[in-house]
Length: 446
Image 1 (cartoon, rainbow, N blue to C red):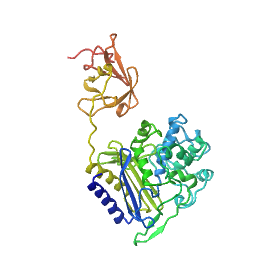
Image 2: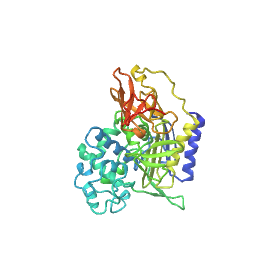
Image 3: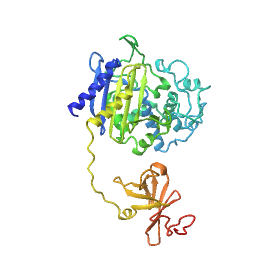
């Protein structure tokens, strides 16, 4: 990156570390699947921390667990609408669905009963589920967003039962290994930062404990480095490799529930936190465990992401810092648009493009560069959607009002397209074309 850009990014993390009194801080910017800038501030073992120093990820662990669950779905081993009882029988909350657990809409309690689980050694699954026998459900399943660490302890058990190995072994084999995240571990290994609480009224530190969370570990156990988290940030931005189908990642990044009111700025998809900021839609997650804060966010549209790792219990604005690093990078070094090149199109498909009408409203049908069809009102707004081919003259809606709906091309005896049938709505070449099977009939204009 340009020297001036690097200086601006470094100054931003330096200001955050000093103003918020972070013992140490590491940050990085990811573009096109790679770390393009990184910086550290503060001290770990007397030295400025680099990208191979481990910090605790906290709840970013949940995004990895969610990915492994989605792999089960893609293999046909479960349906997101399945009740938990089908996969983990015997719990007092077996009616909640897999999707509700992933999106924090199950209504389950936020924390496990007993002592503060993040600062005390965790028990096994049997002990956890027995502690939830009474009062585990705080809200009607599906009624609202209610963040639940317990829900991800449950999903870890679901993974273990399906794969016949621990949730951690599943992640190591199916996610961490394939992505080259070799420095992501359940406990610190090699160079790592110690977790601290910073006194609110004096510049002194209190070491924080980091016990094994037991059955609650899938909610926030993992440690990682900026190098490894950079790979995960790239994954969230779309570089899924062989780990997950891009369409599945897109499903995870789709809003399920809003966290903060009518005009949302944060919400959740399937295992991923979603953030709307200055016209961007970003996906990722924050993490917090005693002694540590972490965040990763990626903007798939811009191809830019960032991450921040801090060894402080509280007080550092990691999310805003992460957003600032992404915004500054794209403002100081804006991307050059990809070069446009013509592409081959099936002549039969080309004949479908152009002007169509839904009743009296004109629409345009276009072929995009990715081969998808875009049907949208001529004057903008309204019900526009993209469509992907599913067969001869049939297409499935990918987004917007018609997501999941079927578009079929109607033809006359000569094979000429006369109308488009979209979820029973007919689009014709002229408004209410009498040559098309318009329901209710067409008497003529007068």
